[in-house]
Image (cartoon, rainbow, N blue to C red; front, side, top):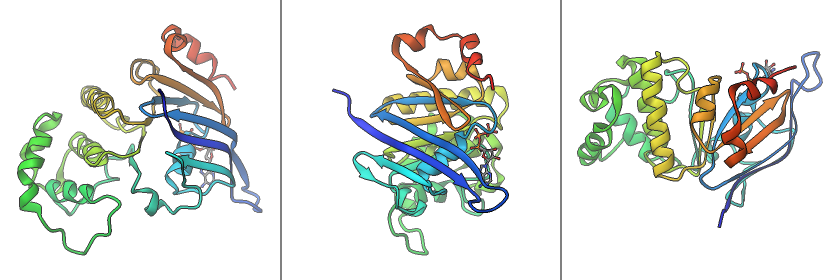
Length: 254
Ligand SMILES: Nc1ncnc2c1ncn2[C@@H]1O[C@H](COP(=O)(O)OP(=O)(O)OP(=O)(O)O)[C@@H](O)[C@H]1O
């Protein structure tokens, strides 16, 4: 039996209300994700994809509507409180990792996501073997860099670290905002494969924004297209299997 994970109910998001820059971005948006849904989210520049993730993670308030995750209404919860349930990897490798902390320290921090943390990170030694094992299977030689400052990693290593940090403690929802877009094609492919493997193995509920139509149709079990703040296509199963890149392009028309 499928189980509902995320419910976005009548989401309306307007920014800069009452100013000449007022802009309505998300318009009566409704979307329900089942547990284990891996959604690839497409849409033209400015369609509202990142805004949607921001409304879900709480960095932006929705003007009206509700964000419900596993029957828990998050609408009024702060971004910090939502971080207990939601993990995100951004496009910029500099986001999501602390540059002046080592890889191992960053990972330790990630194991404590959503918990109250003291100023000192304790128990690093205890976790080192476990981190070595966690990183051994990952691309980019991250396991040999456990004592390196995150700030001196390559973009690919840093994104792999961000991804591991986001998933090391199973989140109820994983948000990926073009998390491989800044990487070279090879590294991007490796991280996408890793993403796919982890999301499937852990049965994570996930939304991944991408501009690569091939990837959008290859990965995940469901594809959603946004246009002008609204869902214009939402397909899974056989209907999605039939979908070609050409079909997808039609939904990009303004
Ligand atoms: N805080 C804000 N203030 C003003 N305008 C905003 C704000 N956030 C987003 N916008 C505008 O809302 C629209 C949607 O932006 P958003 O970043 O969600 O689009 P997107 O689909 O993620 O685009 P892209 O593919 O270019 O990343 C854009 O026109 C953007 O300039």
